[in-house]
Image (tube, rainbow, N blue to C red):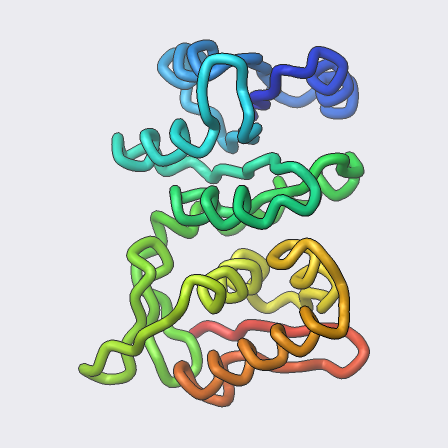
Length: 215
């Protein structure tokens, strides 16, 4: 694992929390590139704001260079535009600061288990086929238009496919708030996704959350 963040106290905390594991740390884009060049990590945890560059741009550059390790972006709490930019650049997931180490461990386990979304190619969802990296979807031979916000919901569910994702997580991850307005927006988007990809694509479990089913 390579953890890239310019806060020394956070790097030290991660090193202690993952003691006994193969963990390297870096504080800059330049140091991260050198570390990746020396040895490709199993998973990359990458902050958005770094002293000598932009973590999103580094993520995009790595994907363009064919580096397909799972990438987890660190974003500021409530900064939805950072999350969307990271996903568009090829990140597989993100976590907002401040975060609990238990959640970071869980996100890393999920990414390592499933591998990067950007390397998966086409996936069958409901009655449609989607390409998460290309942001394209088809039903039969017909391409289905999917909006950026709909992809954000799909990405959050796909990285945890088969697992219930709490509504609160989706609201915080995509909108940065849990309100009557954002809850209504989520319901509208879920309805649109089901209409586009098939009613069976996303299962709602009352009081728990939502599950994306692939096959």
